[in-house]
Amino acid sequence: MEGGYNEGGKGPATTDRGAGQPGIADNKVAADHYHHREEDVDLMAELGLKVYRMGFSWSRIMPDTSGNPNPEGLAFYDQLIDYLLEQDIEPLVTLYHFECPQALVDAFGGWLNRQMIDHYLRYAEVCFNHFKGRVKRWVTVNEQLIATVAGIMNGNHETDPQKNLQNIYQMSYHVSLAEHKAMALLRQIDPEAQIGPVCAIQVVYPYSSRAEDVLAAENAEELMEFYLLDLSVRGEYPPYVASYLKSHGLYPETRPEDAAVLKSSTPDFIGINYYFSICVKAKEGPVNYHQPPFWVSEMPSTPATIPT
Image (cartoon, rainbow, N blue to C red; front, side):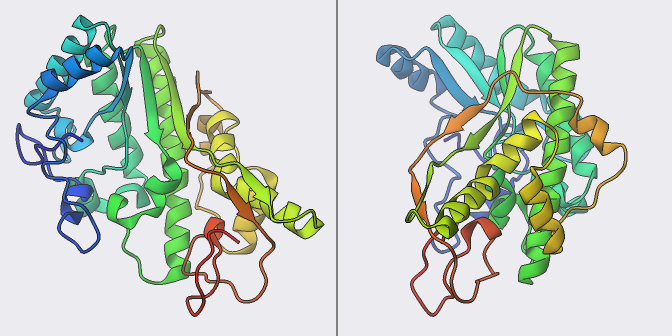
């Protein structure tokens, strides 16, 4: 959406590095919102929109590892948000929408490392303080499932399938810790504001009334969406997912003090991205472990069914 990938002091993001690869759109210009923000907002107002669900580019506000904000980046969002408010459009701001600062990936591996939690919290702190009173609703992270699975977005390019899955769930755990710390921090800085996650929620139907298919559909929902909601709302894995991760050597590394962090806050709302429903049947035959558990497809020799 934003474009302006190397302007206004913005640092490189993982999504910038991905541009130009086969099958991946070049987002360096995108919709060029960076240069046409007022025109875009005017069109929103003409359409009668009352809320603009937008996202900040973390690497525009924090271009390096120093933790110091980029004044030009903040100024861009100042201008955009002030103009939205002039047009009576509420800015609903997402802190983390897939884009990861490349500087943090290069420095210590991004979300694979617990250091990322502190960097995210510093970024959130700057945003909460700077935009206090103007932004009334914040999104912690958009679709954590995709944010942690897609290596082109988070910088995880592990080729070993088992290690890759371990990385995915470790990153997801770190994102959840960061999310809860951010929710607690906002309550200190701006108690009037609201905050919550946005999840992709798909309705999962069993392929038939067979008990095996019904159970497979329930398990697919747990692995695709409900475990993330449980972490956001309850601060713990649901029993099935905890058991699955432990039995498959995928349970993340934790610390004793994490439990208190995960239980310390709850979201004010849950955002839902709904694209389509899916139909699931019990898996038969070999499993393709090159894919995450929630997309347990047929082996590559046959057409993939996502998920089965």
